[in-house]
Length: 160
Length: 152
Image (cartoon, rainbow over all chains, first blue to last red; front, side, top):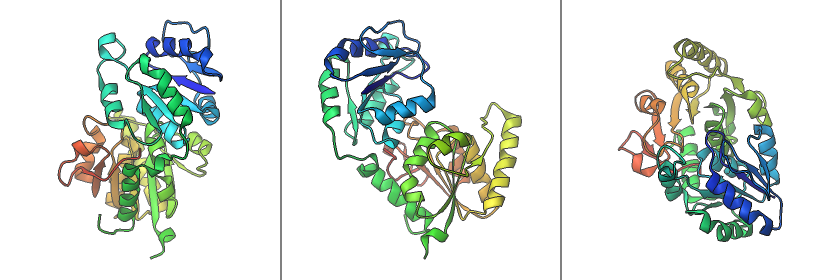
């Protein structure tokens, strides 16, 4: 199963419509949390909101999360050890107030378990890559190893 | 030194702040760690039993912030941690302040969501916490904040 989420605050029809187009070819169920969007999906199960406990359970079952570039979802994916594909909202299309999601994907691209589609045309190949990912762990990224080591040093009062 | 004799209080508000604390859990679990959060029910969902409950607050809620500061002081008095760390937000900052009063070593880890500038509590922590860390290398400024990697 693939879960698609755009957060609760704003719709993101460009992502939802593109995933709806791709859904019949993915060979597995797709469930979308659509937020305040206007587009009505035809090929995937769509819900405006999903309660946190249910979302948690769905993430647990999912093979891939496809999401707007919201840091909260990236963190949930990391904790649950699920690969996540991010497509950033764009301010020039009225999808957010500013382009901070572009900055976010620029910085997160290439970290373990995180894939980026710059726009809807890149979704299909990135989904295939995401479904093929194995043997990675968010805790093992170079930056995470560094933070865990520094935290242990601080707690044990060793030199940083 | 026996690691599990070092008592650590780890504090985060519900949501993204808590997610980041959970990503640090493999390291925290080596010590005598106690958790505090604004959403203990979520902590239970994540397998953390007995987390202390803190009232949620922010800079626009003066009375609730005062209440949160008192509860934070109570939590720190109750557990007497050697080390207090928080990934945010305001309730974690109050625990750090209480820890300063009671002799704990304190660490603020600013949220990975703050890629453009430090949070308000992060800025305050540059002065009030023993260490203030950012998770973005380009935001590090000499000693405050420092950069030592990120949860992701």
